[in-house]
Length: 251
Image 1 (cartoon, rainbow, N blue to C red):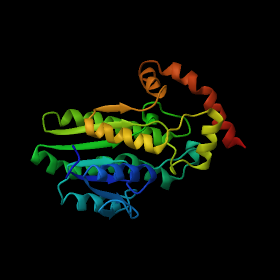
Image 2: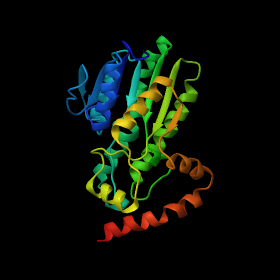
Image 3: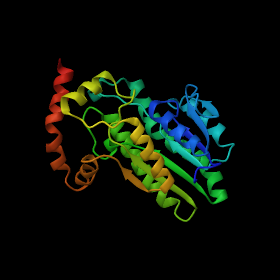
Image 4: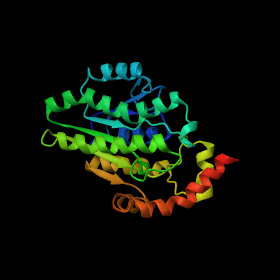
């Protein structure tokens, strides 16, 4: 099995989706370490750090740089759903730290060891929202768009170094990341939501196959392509749902 005896670090591994991924990797023989704010109870080791602050992120980067890792999975994420101007400055900063800056900084921390050994794998878990940038998810969408760009640029930079970069973009997943307001919006707009077990399996499969980019869900994966070439068409397709969101927050 490709994960047997591999040292894998996963951020956000204590969460609903992360714990499922960890269980599958452990079952396939991996040595999994979770980087999170709380104990995972799944992996052999949990490194407790807060990726939402510069100090916490630097402490995490310093600790993981002292070890060799076969695979880094950047999964941790937070989300704001609502009018952009209503998001607090503190939450805005934290959103970009966790969703974009942390994956970049942690990738920096593990890369020297991977490049020295001529092998490694960085897996960035983004979102369909990073390619179809949704209204009322402004910081989340833009951070995930940045993560997609980071993955593409880093993949090109590491060509020939033996280090692969995978970007996986699920659509909405039914986890605790979704607030009651998100769930209400999903109900009003008939938003497709996948069960976490299915998405965890798809992410592990993408890791196993060392895929470059994977977009999960139909028709959302098709909308990714349309948005790249015909964004006005996607604007019109989403306009009715955007109005429903505005009405929610006007109550």
